[in-house]
Image 1 (tube, rainbow, N blue to C red):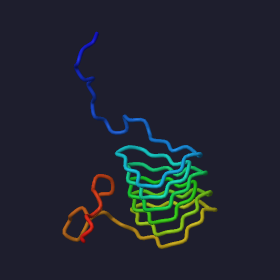
Image 2 (spheres, rainbow, N blue to C red; image 1 turned 180 degrees about the vertical axis):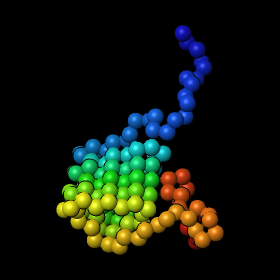
Image 3 (tube, rainbow, N blue to C red; image 1 turned 135 degrees about the vertical axis):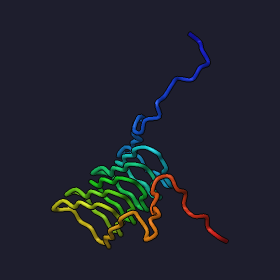
Length: 139
């Protein structure tokens, strides 16, 4: 009954609940998660996660590094993701580096779109969006 044994987990991806920043939430700083993040409020900072959803009321000022990004709200900054979807309510001001990009009619996007295939000429993986830390600043 009062065992100290830790519960067994299978380590399956997606087993954790998504992190949700509600519409009345404002954050100044970076957000990092190995799982899903949904932003319905305002974030001023970079976001690194597996899956990012910007809700209709969501507003992000900063860069995005993710495997999958769904934008229904606003982003001011660069997006680097394998799959990016901009819905009809999306407003993006910044470049998008992607493998797959879908833009619904009515979405607004101002910036460059750059397709990335994920493999360098030597066969090395060049883009590791979620698990890598940003390079250390020299100085």
